[in-house]
Length: 224
Image 1 (cartoon, helix red, strand yellow):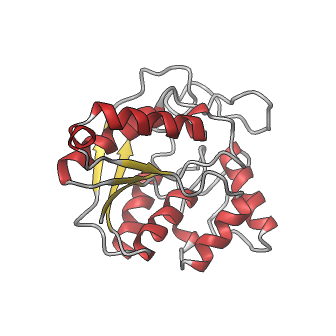
Image 2 (image 1 turned 90 degrees about the horizontal axis):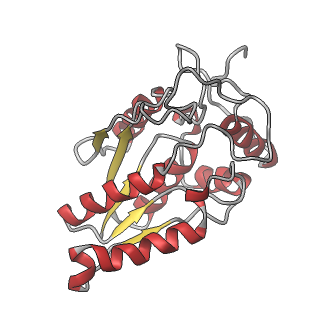
Image 3 (image 1 turned 60 degrees about the vertical axis):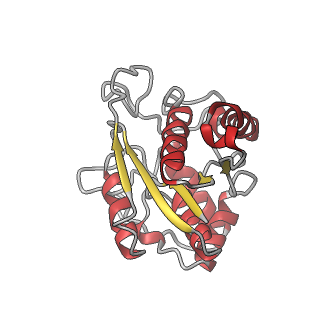
């Protein structure tokens, strides 16, 4: 079974990759370099895929989303928030997962993959609308009617195995699957050496997950 794995090199996508490999699928990792300020994640993704022996099957797509000025991940002139807020933070990239899943669907059709795996989560998350079950369900319906694979009956199904898990559960799941958490990167505002800030939404959720799992996050952090 061929599965396209949307892979950022982060905690969630690395756990999903390990899950796909554990069940015996042939994984085709797809990394998107979109001009993100935390582009160190692309290098982290490459190193992780080397460890898994997947470099030859991996693909990196480069798109320029720097014209999306409302997101601090694509607009360097904005500051990444370092405090929690009830509103969706400016780290939200408009329609990012809509774009990523569209690319993954095209790739899946091209190579005959029947699954797309993505590490979205709707429990410990920042409220992004494109991480919710309703979005995944809607996109699956779109694939059924908007692709040749869907018309032919073979179909392509998006899987989001972490969507209902807490970060604690994801950390423990990854540990059980042998994920090297020290190699993963989650921070939105790393320094020039790639060390995590420890204050952005992504860092706070990650650290919360490790703490609740009774573990120490082995990733490098600034000032530690």
